[in-house]
Image 1 (tube, rainbow, N blue to C red):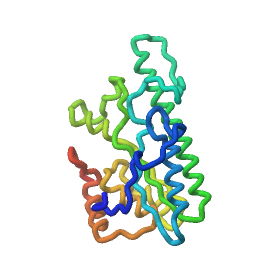
Image 2: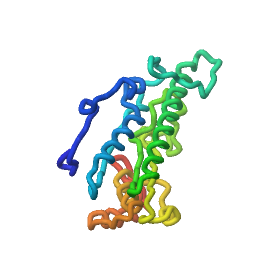
Image 3: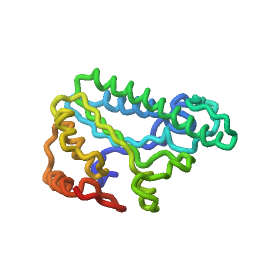
Image 4: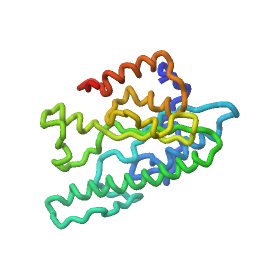
Length: 220
């Protein structure tokens, strides 16, 4: 991590975790955001923070019982043959609801601050839910197409700054699909930060190849 430019690394073993900060057995999104806010509040005047944060709250396994967590039944099921699948889906939806609430509170804290912030959120894969239809892919039935479907995720960029591009400018001629190597371009644009020579080159590549990863690439 230091070779990537990070000055400090913190894993869960480095944090004094309280029992109420756990959701199931994972450090909750709410606790994670609280930790980030504490880091922001501890900055000296003029200091800035870039944080790359990985959370585990919504990771599998799903459908299990925990003393500190209750699943909301968003979906009802009368078929005993699919009860486990429905329980897993309700579990994931409940966790997502907790994430929505935590993210909303976190962004409200940033919105009410005088500093400018940019928040980028993305996942690394779709949830591991047991429905067979989950593996169906609009890109075909090949193994590669199914893997791409599982690894295709939405991403979000939020900012309280007015120094970057507007949402209309951001969406103008924007490809619906992108890849992880290009998200930094969108983050820099949202923050109003000019591209370095390297990212200028990446931007030129994006115009010709808007999506690229170890499995596939798409032409413009």
